[in-house]
Image: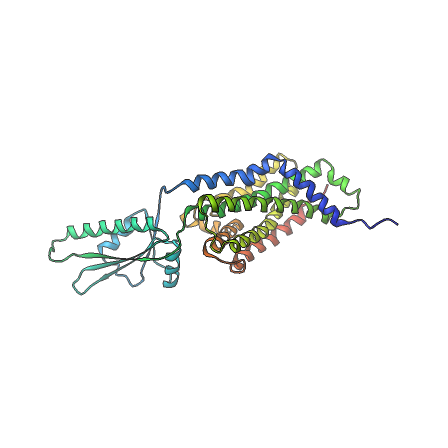
Length: 363
């Protein structure tokens, strides 16, 4: 009696064969591992550069004074005036903003500038302190009153975790790697299998279509988790990338990577279905990936973009992956705490896989 054909063994055989092909493919290492590593190294060694200081203004501040007016005119300072007190304190402790400024007039008619800084961003806080001191000195020198100063500066430092450049860059590079693996890897492999009639030969065997798709997807999942582990470990031990809760944070990041890659594979299925030949794959794939690499907060904060462009950034799925990875790694959030970001990614997944089912071709 013939044994029943094992779809599981077929799936695992396809997975192992595809995984060997990926490890032998130099382009897979270049796009999924080498490029992200290069960016991590470059940005990891960068101590500074062109800067912008985010400063929250206390809602009870007196804004009808020369200190506030001068502060508004400085291009390198971005004033935040529409946040709640709790959100301001939270952002200050995380180093998202460099300081909180409150300007009040005392009984003598002098303006008291109260500055709260954070140890999470000492450089930006010290620059802000220096700027305020210069503004106050300028105002005091310009007044004819010499018996008392027109303005004085008080300061307070709020303790917080230091937010380093690598804490922003590495999650973005993880997203970069996952999107590249999901789109380019999947699109090319299924188009090649179709053009070389490998899939047609599969159909002559008892192997199910489900086993073929899952085998190829599982191989990319294993490879992407492998690269994610390298990137996180490299960033943590070489550049001090923050893993707030250690191994627990590490596992949460890997779980999120698995969810994201499954969704990004759908984009690859769409590209392989739409593309007519191998030459058309890069053009179509870049239409999906390039805007996300540039606009989804991969290299620069979305807040640095023009106001009219930010809604576009907030529409892209990679934005929510990058945000969720940063919340898990730096803020100590769990996979359940980033449920809203995962929910939006899942909505993208439903839409993309619905399109993939319509356009994907086996022959």
